[in-house]
Image (cartoon, rainbow, N blue to C red; front, top):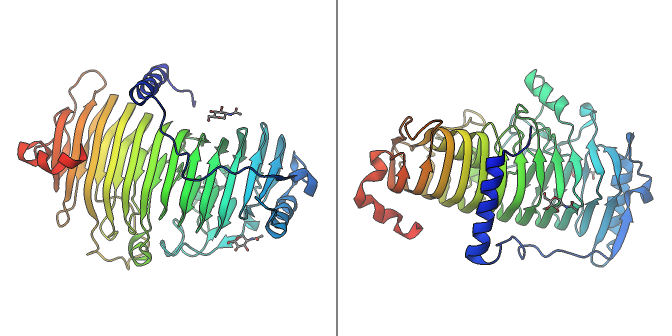
Length: 446
Ligand SMILES: *[C@@H]1O[C@H](CO)[C@@H](O)[C@H](O)[C@H]1NC(C)=O
Ligand SMILES: *[C@@H]1O[C@H](CO)[C@@H](O)[C@H](O)[C@H]1NC(C)=O
């Protein structure tokens, strides 16, 4: 099910090769957060941890982390999780620690959903994302931390989300489902060489964070699992995501910054977000910005992306009532195969937290550059639809080639309330983007 099709892998390989020869080296996230060597090491088994898949290890994890937090060894402490399946309830990490999963180590979430702790709603959302009031704490949680690493030899963090997805399907969720891993108000976070599986809700959620690196991760959830977004950088800055494979039931990467009047009041943007060499498949979007962008999103660069068997390749989405801004977004070097819609930029997406949202709070969308995008088996090239009272400006398409199922003929682009330019775009885009005098407005983007 998660096998990459041969054509995709050949092309991915060519892209990577081309990048090697054009730059001579691979650009990486290194440097954003220094990798720490931890002198002090403990194992979960030192705290009574048992990896038999049945024993509840909550006490072991909480005691190990309490020890790390209070002994405060110089240079921090590494918590080793040996091969085995460690069932546990949710737990909090602490600063200056590395959670290290050995090859064959699995940290597995308990199915006792009725015992799951609740935490306050995020101020930028005003309530839980799917239910009013508080929300269930993420399975692995961190608030106000610095210098935390989750890594190892590709061990697994398994949310056993099925029970939560069913509660959602049956409409008997009392509060918003837990994320798999969430960091709040934290800086200096590295997540690498870990497999994330079957999250109850979003997989990795850095919110109000800075300097976050996520690389060499694999994120898996069934196509029909509700809201299992891969990585959602939210009101965070200097986030770098690279060299990862994501196949879930919702957007693979979605950059966000709060919801309507709550996000506007909180006013914390997402900025300087880099996404590169990410491959995957989603029934919704591959690379997304939004739809919650009320604190603003700027300086996003996504490059060398491969999206296959998906709903939408690149999706920038906001709504009336969101306010905020989306500006300086660049997406380049994208290959897509078998997607319903190649590119979608829309001002009418997503729901509202309550009916107190301000209908006059219009989003400001300016400066979106999409270039070097190549697709095969694309059903619809795309649509770019701004708002009548807030047109999207400086929308620039360059060197885009989206092929249909059989040949180059398929529904044309749909555009409204948008201005910008298009250079070498096939099928040819709508008139709003193709007038030659407009191309000046894109000049500094190319
Ligand atoms: C974990 O963190 C949350 C939110 O910061 C807090 O409410 C909760 O009490 C903490 N739990 C433990 C066991 O420390
Ligand atoms: C873990 O997975 C990554 C890719 O996701 C791979 O590059 C790396 O070599 C793997 N590490 C080990 C120790 O198997």
